Length: 116
Length: 110
Image 1 (cartoon, chains in turn yellow, purple):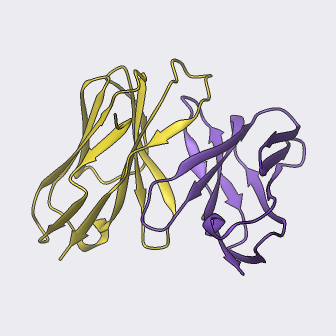
Image 2 (cartoon, rainbow over the protein chains, first blue to last red):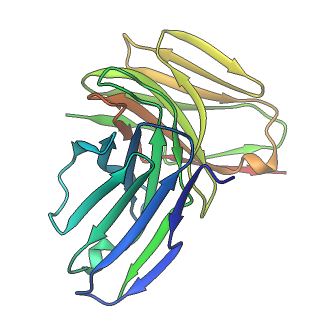
């Protein structure tokens, strides 16, 4: 009965490879997010989707491409991985239906990406 | 720009009270969240303030002053399991976009 799940939990790969991280939520939420938490534990928003539509797109290299096949899933694909991409990536979801709403975000367990 | 400041580290004794402060300067402010994050785990929701004043929830309370751009999280009757990072986050810029502070690492000792 996990609320927000991510796969894989750990990902170790070589520089230059392409990888994907998957996220699913069973909370019935409309909005999902991707965050990056670096080695200094600073949590930073990357993207957000509301009902499969991209609504937040921060300054992130275009090697990162989110995809939302439906409102319960938000995947993150990363091309040409670099050393600096090593971090923990968290997915989150929230019952936010429009621009003005604020509500609790529920986080997945995280994916620890290590680029060698 | 968007800026959130909170102390990097704090220590406290089991059974005591600790206050973690957070100041913010963000545009399109729509409320202030506090999250707890244990090492190697996901952030978990603690509290949300959108109006000025104090919100109490068991051992944890959170305060907000919108005019001062200031919030604090108050933890009472500290327990060893409260050792964690506490993240202050401002909902800013629409669709509940959260801007996080760097987090305050709290160490509770016997």
